[in-house]
Image 1 (cartoon, rainbow, N blue to C red):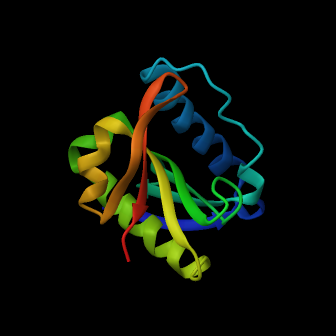
Image 2 (tube, rainbow, N blue to C red; image 1 turned 120 degrees about the vertical axis):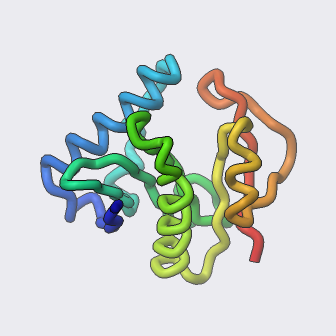
Length: 149
């Protein structure tokens, strides 16, 4: 069973920080063959969602306050599940937990994400609605989506 917590950057242990960057790199850089600047300066200003099974980080998301990614929205990004655990459908649990954490910490803002376009239907099951046209972000098609009230 997965256990979720969230922490500010300063609350992360060195092991959690290492595991967070390792998981993000494993998926976003290596698996998706995408060279991009993952460490973008927003991590110290973010809330980090950590999903662990038996002490191993297997799921992660980053929550950003209004004004960091979008002027009028808080945001959830870097949503990732370890390839070894995807068959367990942990992505749904991760997104649900991240939405609740965002609503708790930033109750007065709406949530917007930049979703990989092929995951649009996945995010629709969590009440996100696409806005605008698809666009390329780091060479991968994405679409903006806003959580419906």
